[in-house]
Amino acid sequence: MSLHAPDSTPGPEYAQAPDTGPAPAQLSGPGEAPVSPQPPGPAPAPSSAQDPAPGRGPASVPEPAPPAPLPGCVITADGAYAARLASDGTSWFPERWTLDGPEPYAVPLPGNQPEEPGTEVVPMGDGRVLIRRVVDGRHSFSLLYPTGPRTGEVPLGAVSGGELTLLPPAPGGRCAYAIAVGERSTGVWMVAGGAFGPEFLAEVPGRCSGGVWLDRAGRMLALDRSLDGGPVKTVAVDLGRGGEVTPLLQIAEASADRLVLADPDSGLLLVRSDAPSPGHERLGWGVLGSTLPVRFPECLCLTDCAVTPFAIQPGQTLMPESCAVALRIDGATGTWLGLWRPAERQMHQLAAPQGWLTGAGLWTRDGELQLPCATESVPCGIARTSVPEPVEEPAPQTVPEPPSAARPVPLQQAPLAGLMRRAATAGTRAAPAG
Picture 1: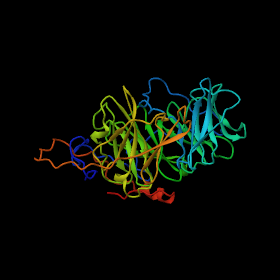
Picture 2: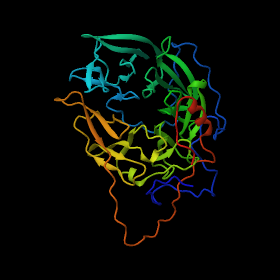
Picture 3: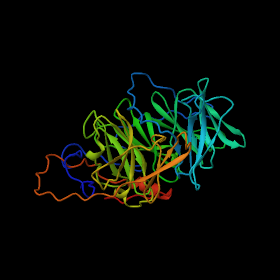
Picture 4: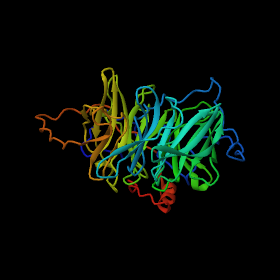
């Protein structure tokens, strides 16, 4: 079987006959046997929050693909708050945006001194802003909040050394997480929301990047992992079971397969893989828990442009093909916006609104895309748009001969049964298999 959108045609989607070649790969999940050889056992976890995080590996170890462009601001999973590093022309400072009221408004949160340009900020569900600063080789974390004319700050502690990156806001907004990449393993840290500052949660064998939440409970985390310099494959990390790791995405044995976005309501997954064209990554889509293969629509492959999905429409339970997806498009002439649904064979390309905090946005359940914007005249605003209604194509006069080769790549023999059972207990709903 193949994962076809209603109007999809053969040809541009990567194909391989399901009854030939090596055993097909799939979206697999916790509870199923790993598809890769036995990974090396995890190193002992640090005993306290002050222990060093894993350090950067040697130059001989292949690095993951270049990361996606950073968004202009970060938005909580429920869309209530956003945070960014703003500038007054002379210095940088954190800024919190409130988005769930009648009108959006921004509150500056300057500290005692200007921030460095690369400082990371993440909004929390209660309106506070987590900030990560690098001080004397240590990653220091604090929660910021407005207190009249000043900024209140709650120091949380620090993690020593290494390469550390904050993950996207977790569902619920109570906790914040980071990954620290070492030579042979990656540490997962809860840097806010614990009782005693940063807490070490799990050691994942291999070098990891990315970070996508798979459920509404903030328990299932997807990471893109490379083991011993091998190809990148996405794995699921169960934070409720001590960081138990199981394969999630493997399209072909030697392909680099990464998860870009996931929507727990519909089960829609956006993936990036070089399986269709080795050495050149393409965007594709699949469904969590389905036995159907990943599709790689031609309309998402733009010549000389980087296309990065950044938001999926929520609330479309059991209807992944109807979810609207927003994409950031970066080309030689600038950055603009793409809007697409898996059920359609075209991507709508629109000019970005003036002052867009590039790469940031969220969908409402009824299909309105909200893009945060900041201009000199409107320092805190929201631009709104939606996916245009599809235009019926005229019926062709003749039936063209179908292109050669083109059944989609099968994923593997079984659906994500294990992940689905566990995710269901954590509040995840997903599309049924098939």
